[in-house]
Image 1 (tube, rainbow, N blue to C red):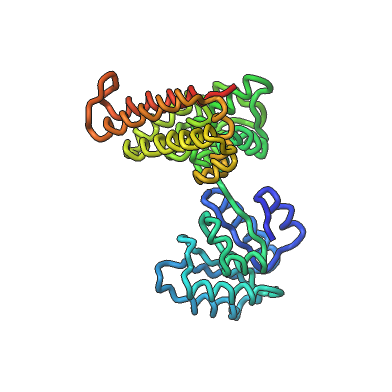
Image 2 (cartoon, rainbow, N blue to C red):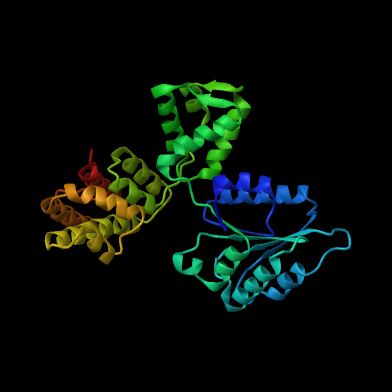
Amino acid sequence: MQLAFPQLSAHLQKGLRSLYVLHGDEPLLIQEAADAIRAHARAQGFSERSVHTVAGAHFDWSEVLAAGGSLSLFADKQILEVRVPSGKPGKEGSAAIQQLAAAAQGNDTTLSLFLLPRLDAATRKGAWFGALENAGVSVQLDPVERPALPQWIAQRLQLQGQQVAAGEEGQRSLQFFADRVEGNLLAAHQEIQKLGLLYPAGELSHEQLAAAVVNVARYDVFKLSEAVLSGQVARVQRMLDGLQAEGEAAVLVHYTLAEDIRALKRVKDAMIAGKPMPLALREQRVWGPRERLFERVLPRLSETRLNGLLQAAHQVDGIVKGLKVPDWPTDPWQALQRLAVRTARFCNVR
């Protein structure tokens, strides 16, 4: 059984299942989901908890299997928590997990809770993960994407009795908040809690938010790609400044930008040759959110512009490797700024 995170609370109100799987790469949501499950379990008499973290290829799964089949002298119900940080339990682990999943079905004395990182499609199709999903409840917990972040912040503020002003001023406040915490949901949660301590319930002004919310944003090159393809020029500039300040390698940032430009050019060439866009995108292994962005910008990007971007990416490649290129900044990050902003402006489809 698969659930979305917002469905978990209502599900738990109806009663606990004997096995839960939480997988994703957002620590805050993993923590909140696990805490909710543990709280409901404790309320129903699951008073003991054993935690096992799978570390290394030689982890002893016999301890986990033994813990799942034993109870304390002082408690008749227990939580068996298994953490697999790598998401790769190995051959022995796969067999042990399938055994635990089978033992969990109909078991009202042991609640099994598996905590996993974000899993790729191949892993989710594996026998051990399939056994967990069939035996219990699976909840995927992914980061809150940037477009949804202002609404997420508003909902969290509402939970503590606070809200921003209505209309344009409130939206400006939420966008400001989102810019300050992008990519760092745990810190965003802490900043929201701080507002609850600083100000009483009710409406928060933009000045109050600006004075209280610390800039704790974190960026990665993959989100930069999303911002460029979305045509978000101001966000692109802010993210590049953040990546430089965080010590990201300029060559990696360039690779990400250049790879998008090359993929756009290859898909465009295939379309000019007569291939339908969906087929061209599949052949270039463009899918998911990136596919939707490509579909949005490709009809408006001319072959001439793409050729120009490809040439610019080649020039910036030399700059980040220490070469000088006429009419370009010698500083790698300034060159990356120019390339990224130019690409974003071309992708800014209205």
